[in-house]
Length: 208
Image (cartoon, rainbow, N blue to C red):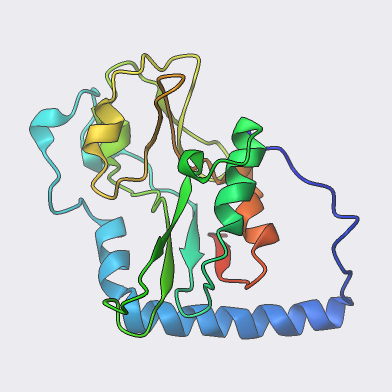
């Protein structure tokens, strides 16, 4: 479980302003997602293109896996590439500022091959038909009771790497020093990357 940071240094906003900003942010996020994320959203709700039933090691079918109830949404137009999300993620989970261990990743594109975007943040999609979950034969991939996030139980993980190989989005992280695997757990419903993103380029969406 992630470690929460103190709020004492963050500026307090009146409730009215918070609500106004929240609505504006939501409209912005929805616009970005509709314009650039329709295909990604479709892939989250269905099995990825490279889904391989023969690699499923669990005793259930993809259709029997309960859907996730929360996930992270990224706004590539707002991302400034500061990598604060990566630093906060690795610090809260591993106690060290090491972006390579972060469960969220920032990609730079100075040549603008992604259109006008210079940087883009990628987060675990918490796929409904999650290959990582279905690939683990040790039942080390479990579902968070609150968010439905697909998370790795370190006490059960045998470091076999099946989840790492199965994820079509490369969102499972391998700590080569410790030979352990991890992925985004949504911080139990309080994602630190969202709280500390200075550009407000991340949004935590939770179904009611």
